[in-house]
Image 1 (cartoon, rainbow, N blue to C red):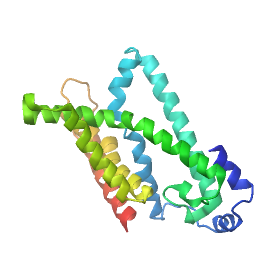
Image 2: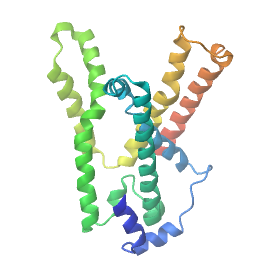
Image 3: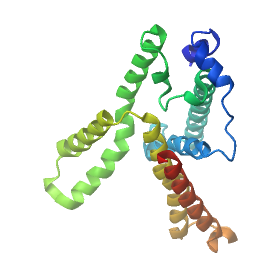
Length: 232
């Protein structure tokens, strides 16, 4: 973020800065807004790790809430700074992976790329943990005692790596993931769980299905618009 802020104001990319100054602002009528919403949806992609975070917090809800609050605040501020500084530098020409916009011989950009790659490498197991747990349960149901931990890890990892090597538009991957999975996690799945829950107190709007049905419809619309605008 510090590097991007420096490049936004030091005049290293004057042509890009001129283009950024004439870029159209993102409005409610701009289809790109739905791409952004899809990308923002990826913020919920680690929610499957919430139970383990709760256990690590000693099952102390106040401590857990503090961790979540501070973590999301820092994440939101960091992402806002990245978006703003990237747009101020490159405008509408900003790549889905903004570090691709910087020159190959830009030393600070290369350092940022190396640090970003290191971050991805060491945080991938955290994101993969939830998927591995679900795959383990599925494998146990399908194969029983023949379940193999090596198979559970190696096959998905090889598939994910192959897809990563074939695709070069990170922005498309993030927006599609957010549009589909984010909409499901944020709107659709919680609404379905609310409709099925029978041992919790519910408001009248929750009991008659108004709130969960509205959430489901909102999730479907968000997913469809996100996918369409991301691809086309």
